Image 1 (spheres, rainbow, N blue to C red):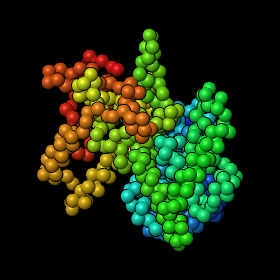
Image 2: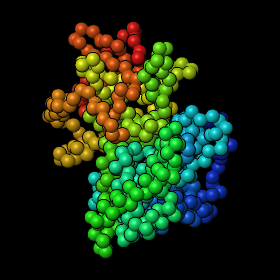
Image 3: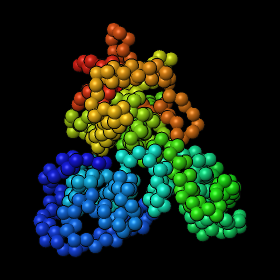
Image 4: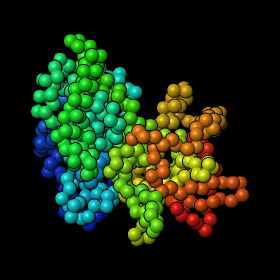
Length: 471
């Protein structure tokens, strides 16, 4: 994710010295650059001084090429993306320089083998800025800006990065049909258009291609696709009946409707990181293992998503968690992001700790901290202060947090929706302070959770002893 220049190398590395060297010869020479968009299209630019051009300067060229107004300068950012790593650049970053350091970044933040790292090459993407508030999106009236946001949101829906329930992705698929095919098609014309573009152009791959399994095979993909087509057409009729057909603002209204529907997904606009969590012990031998997860972080909170099952394992707002990350202490250990939150065990309120194993734990922790600080500054600005927390605000914040925790149920509800948390699917460490002793202590960590929050925490600090019990 995003970081300062100091957060990324330039620490010397024997792995990529061959890529480095003088770039003085390319300072003034005109160079071609492809900037990709979420729609799989690209902006072709020919620029001089590309090697020393900042992301901020490059952004002006891209906005000009796309006819994007300068008022949308904060909506989008540049990202380096590859199958191994996604990173958002800050305005001051030099894309050319970071691209030449890509192997350093992969060695530092991924577990990829050297042969994969040597062949990996990032694409420069222009897409949504993770720090742009979603509330501002619906105030945008420029169709070009809305279309870029729509293309990215649709891509994340189709690829399963944004898990959603059947009725939700059907509505989104119908809106995509209306946006891309128009609202005036009859059933026959719509069926032909859907088949020409393929069902997977409107519905998530795991839905359009079937969920797999023996029963699905017996049923046949053709029968399932026909059923999905009919459901999509029915939903399209519903969407079109409420659309202002023929209005010059129809297209913008449909784009707003699509984004508004995506906003109901708590992880919309997140930056995503790859990691693993422990599986709960199962069977007579109590075998556990790990499961692959995607960790989404935005201005709203942190969301842990099961990569295989396409549903949320844990979703927490920043007011509901404390966090930290730890570095490997010995060879073979992992980088770990720790998330602490309220839970319930045997009817008793407890604090729970979740371990997320990932070499990107440092990036995740830094992004959480920055988002918390941004929210704190925003709340202070709304209150008319200069961003500093006064003693009265500190007291008020502590009192408010306490009331919030009293109102909030200790147990996270388990429901059928893919958006709801499934804490029972996670192997967490539980502990409780009964006033005398701590049961099931936390493992050692690099720094206290409780020094990281922008506001005073509502948890009681745990005193770590030499005798540790790990879950």
